[in-house]
Image 1 (cartoon, rainbow, N blue to C red):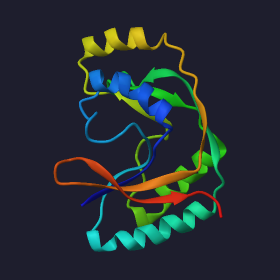
Image 2: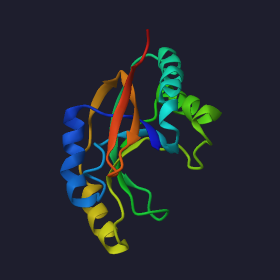
Image 3: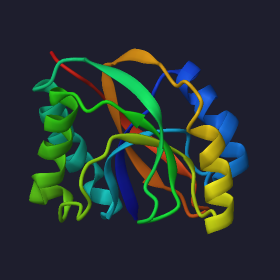
Image 4: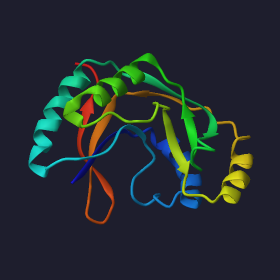
Length: 170
C-alpha cells in the first residue's frame, strides 16, 4: 500500500487553496490541501504500527512552529505546478530532513525541499501561463501555528486518508 506524511493547514488556508484547486487540480477530490513531508512510499499494512511508533518519537523532538505563506509561485519550467509558497522555518526544514533522511521511510526525495501547497497541476503550457499570470498577483498572507502532522495511506480508489495524527512536543 502507499503511505505518505503530511501537514494539513487550517481550515481557512484549506478553503483558500480549494477555491483554486477545484478548478486547476485534478487531484482535488483525492486529498485535502496539504504540505508534504514525505511523498508516497510503499509499506505493508501490517507495518503501519511500526511507522506510527517511529513518527511518535520524531514528533516528540519538535515544538509547534509558525507556518507562513508568502506568495503564489510555480515550478515552471520543471513542471506546470502552481502552488502557495510556504516560508521554510528551521523547525519545518529539520522535521522534513529527519523524516526524509531516515532509511526507515525509504529513499530520500530526489527533489529539493520547497515547502508548498499545490493549487494547480497537470496544466498544459498555455493553461499554466494564463492561470499563473493571474494568480501570482494575488496577495497570499496566512500565518498559523503547526502543532501536528499525519501519517496517511491511500485507499484503493486513490483517496488519501489519515491513519494517525502526531502532536509536536511533549
